[in-house]
Amino acid sequence: MTATLPSSADAAKFLADFHEVAKIGATPNGGVDRQAATAEDRLTREWFRGFAEARGWEVRVDGIGNQFALLEFVPGAPHILLGSHLDSQPLGGRFDGAYGVIAALHAADRIANRVAAGEPRPTVNLAVVNWFNEEGGRFAPSIMGSSVFAGLMDEKQMLAVQDLAGVTVKDALTAIGYLGRDARPEISGYAEIHIEQGRILEREATPIGAVDYSWYTQKLDIEVLGEQSHTGATAMADRHDALVGAAKVILKVHEVTEHFEPETLVSSVGQLTLEPNSPIVVARRVHLVADLRAADKAVVLTARDRLRAEMAEIAAATGLTINARDFDVRDNQHYPEAGLALAERVAQELGLGARRIRTMAGHDSVAINRIAPTVMMFIPSIDGVSHCEREFSRDDDMVAGVSMLTEVAWNMLHG
Ligand code: GLV
Ligand code: MN
Ligand code: MN
Ligand code: MN
Image (cartoon, rainbow, N blue to C red; front, top):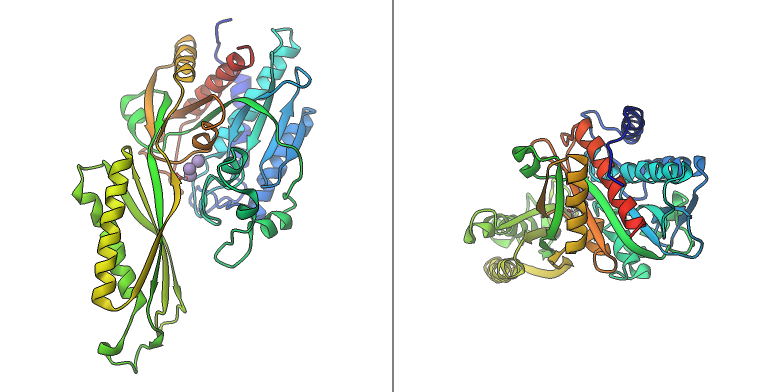
């Protein structure tokens, strides 16, 4: 059967739900703040549960807080899984992640309605997922729930991860009532739709991106150790200021990209904590996290080695101790050709332009792509901005994306 665009009523229902969820944790300038396992995260989970239970779907929560809604067509068969994440960065955008989960719920609803109306019954089952802690802003590493699901991270270790206040994942999930014990669904395929977070689709006026490759990414977890002392009474020559060392490291992380062709490597220090953090005390310890990403793994490894050497020089010159370790390493990888071909065929049937595209941002699909045939799709982002309140995608692009996901899932369910 040839794919068709949704009725305007279906489109309106999706948009109403999208804009409703955007109210949860809403921030003054149009964003949301719904970090993993917070009260706001709990509210989105309640909304997800309400959507599923209103349709009679079974809701499950696993041991790392992943939330599933299950639709059974064939008892005992595996599931095609659709989803993304409802958590956000601090002062994040309302589209990153949430769009994909709400799109997946609506795709599942349309599929259920079509089957109820007599269209061919799927040969496998369907499930929707809201992955726990994709963003990694509160609890690092990111992509946590899907990585545990895929067997790439250890559940016990992840439950013990602490936020900056010393609260563990386990305690935070327990506090919001989402440390589950339910069995994980067995899956035979995964599809995710997300905003691009770059400017290629917008610039080319192409509504759909079929993701064919994800960049190599890694972080460097860095600790600079100095000596705590009085900011007034200590002679300048006697200071071992960890924050001065950290400042030098941050500049090196920023400048390392200049040793490569423009935009082949990107890097930032996005998180920094200092102890004891008093205006009248020379810092004893600074913890910072650098994020390095490139299409080519060798570029990141070369940059990382260069930074390690530069940090050793800074340590020698300042008398500080600098420890650095690789962290949150995600290998570059291709997405399967069959899924790309499927997305392209569906886009053509729907009359939507599509192009292949790479992702520099991390997604739950980079974890699930390891264990199941995976299709990842993008819709345009305006101005390419993301992880900020200004993040924006247009209603008509979101609506087109829901149709894409619905038809891709329909094909996977009848494959
Ligand atoms: C998280 O959003 C990432 O891009 O790694
Ligand atoms: Mn995301
Ligand atoms: Mn994100
Ligand atoms: Mn991400």
